[in-house]
Amino acid sequence: MLKHGILGLLNYGDMTGYEIMTVFRDSLNYFWQAQTSQIYRELQGLEKNGWIKSTHIKQENKPNKNLLSITEEGKKELVAWLKDDNSKSFMRNPLMMKTFFRGECSIDENIDYFKNLPERETVFPEGIENAKAISSEYQKYAPDPLKALYWKFTIDFGIRYEQLLREWSEQCIKTLEEIKNENTDN
Amino acid sequence: MLKHGILGLLNYGDMTGYEIMTVFRDSLNYFWQAQTSQIYRELQGLEKNGWIKSTHIKQENKPNKNLLSITEEGKKELVAWLKDDNSKSFMRNPLMMKTFFRGECSIDENIDYFKNLPERETVFPEGIENAKAISSEYQKYAPDPLKALYWKFTIDFGIRYEQLLREWSEQCIKTLEEIKNENTDN
DNA sequence: TTAATCATGTAACACGTTACATGATTGC
DNA sequence: GCAATCATGTAACGTGTTACATGATTAA
Image (cartoon, rainbow over all chains, first blue to last red; front, side, top):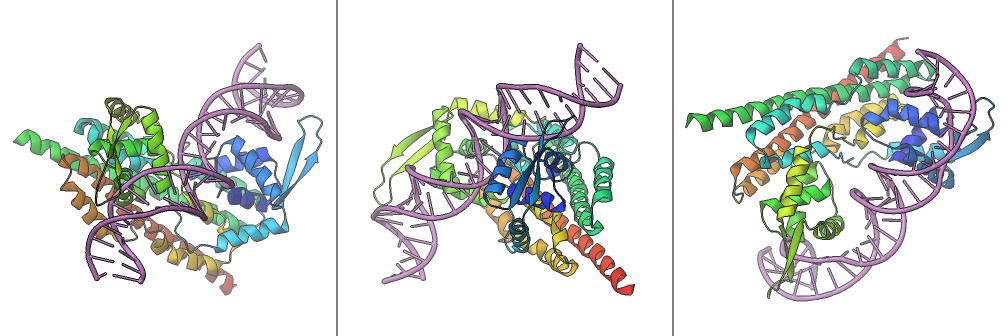
């Protein structure tokens, strides 16, 4: 999955590993986490597969860099990956794992847990406006404005997901408070 | 994360690896995937940590089994994990990764993509009613009905997530169709 | 002078996935 | 007779995480 993500970014234009890292942090990172070390390892794999090639560039005022570019085979692989969309893509949600076992904590603790949840689990820690601004920023350099559209779709998803978290945790709090009142009434 | 999930299930009562696998499939699997092979490996790790212990039980009409039970140290670890809820738990969403790069496909292909999306990416492939029924089924055996409540909270999350997918993809289709009409009008 | 930015990685370990392997009982 | 259920794993490989390692330039 990460291999194809990197391939997709390189399809926008040649980049160094460092640049891939920064673009990734500004976009896909909201829904997929990757460490720098992992990106550099995946780049080695991509080159072995013949999906990218690297050119060593000497610089005077900065450290030397490897400029990476996608190959024809890489483009084929990217498109093949995109067209293969008939199978479910499993989301992995650690939040649900923890929520599931909350029965081990007290009702009051859990009311607190759900109260803090939307802020703690925010998709955009730097704010939605910031995320939108960054995507518009990149759009300036994008050759095709239609490509930036799908970036915006993912941000829209994030906004809706934050909304879901607020509504869901509110409902959980409501239920827990009802139970609490039932117990004190008896 | 999986280690603590297994620990949490064993906290409900002693189980074999096979039973852990089936309960997992009926509950946490909607938000976290784990293969049988992985569960058995994690069980070895849990035993090495002293968080669970296993008892070999000979059976006559069935294969012998290892009954696993949580230790006092395991319970401590489980609670410690639950109390540690101040840090963001990152969701990993491959759906967003693929959506992000959809600019490589045509508008029409993408309209199709979003039309099929809610069904394809359903959280409960066997249906919501089925998922609810299973959770109620387990509740009968649960010693504390309050514990089943949090299971239901996760199902509620899943229902809301499916709703999000429907609304979001509808909005994406709308936007794409507007762009399509603009292009044909000119 | 100190932090941020640019730039690239290795090593070790942890966790996830795929394929393979075995074999009894029970219900249709 | 065949599929499903019960029951337990190993091996190999792929991916993710944490810690470590280096070093120049630039702006506050």
